[in-house]
Image (cartoon, rainbow, N blue to C red):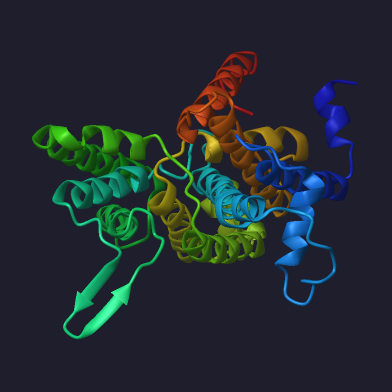
Length: 365
């Protein structure tokens, strides 16, 4: 029996449990490993110590430096990586089902170019602050890392997608081909404007390129924004999984199955955009997660989205945490942008899919 058939013979619940277990293991090792290695048992004890009501469950056998590394530096970083990875993978599944195209990814309608433009303008303008004063009212943005860059990237990404939607929408609905073409056009426009801003501000090029390559920050504030947004968005997508199955069959078949096609298209586009934009606004542009993780798990689980969506969330979370761990440990004293690691890991798999598709008449499966 071929490997693919043997994998599909495994009950889906065991695969989901295995992915959940893998995520827990990767999270623990993501916190434990780094320039300073901390035993997993110590990590586990420190985490228990910080849980309400469990402070005295384990004796304090660690140093204050180890506690700072675990709780302040590494734990928020791995949680942020897990949330962004899971959100990108869930949005990738949604976009691939919506466009009925396995090459679709979360950035296909201009999110990445919009977020980049917003972040670039703020960085070049020198508006990287952590509080906003409106009259006597002061809105503090503590620990945001990029300050207004995150907010600008998020709003610009939503703005670009909003323009794409308005351009593509017709009186009778939302043609996906027109939506895709509008996304490509607006992405090109936003990229051109970004290039112009970078060209006029050469002193900021290094910072902008670093943001473009993606980077996970150690920030509890970022975790507080991203984790709830991704959790809610992913849960909504999972609840709509059967509608996504129907949409993948075509609009006519979905209508026959009782799906409000145009309304659901808007819903999937909105939720996927929000999940992707909130992640991109805090960590920059991280590619391939939303493309290869759904593909990989579709080979194992098949096309049913009620299984594929939760599996992709778990798989995407584990993948990005692992990539971030490699990015900060593979070279001593040097941290590689995590987007480079995801590209190095994702490109071979994408090429494998391309070669494999030739055996099936040039179509991805």
